[in-house]
Length: 191
Image (cartoon, rainbow, N blue to C red; front, side, top):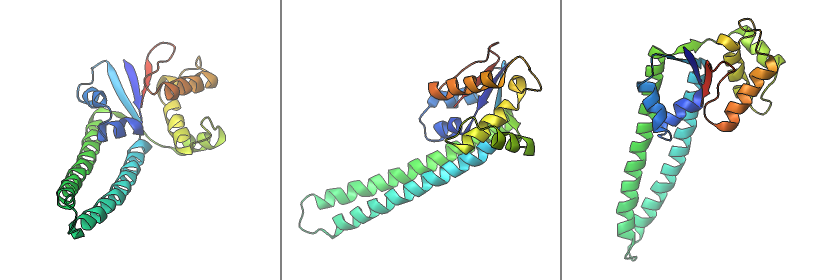
């Protein structure tokens, strides 16, 4: 069985519609693949959704301001058309935001039923604080330590994969923005 580790970007790529293949993979997971996700990725995806909603609300406010300006312009021959087009844009933009939230919730629901979850423990937190692998992003560092604590990459489960090798697998995965495998091709990362 292949363990496919996924993280927040996998969920957000489904939610935002950036990766239709991720959604298909989630719905049609082969029996030979075990999806595994750190539990903190669920919370991080909700935080990412909150950020998306804040950006959405800012843009929506800008649209509303422009709609009001166009409505007040009584002399421009283009103002009336602009008023209706911006109004439709606002409606479509709101619908897209709702689509993003719905897709995120659906993907989390599917994962909660079909994926193994890596629980965040005090030991994992301590390890991430004591052994920084990703210095620029403490959240990604913590996610990496969750993954490294699990399955065949865990030092207590497979002594043949060194800490350096685990770090190299992660670096390869992060730089490729796709999939990477372990030495025996039994571990993959997706994001």
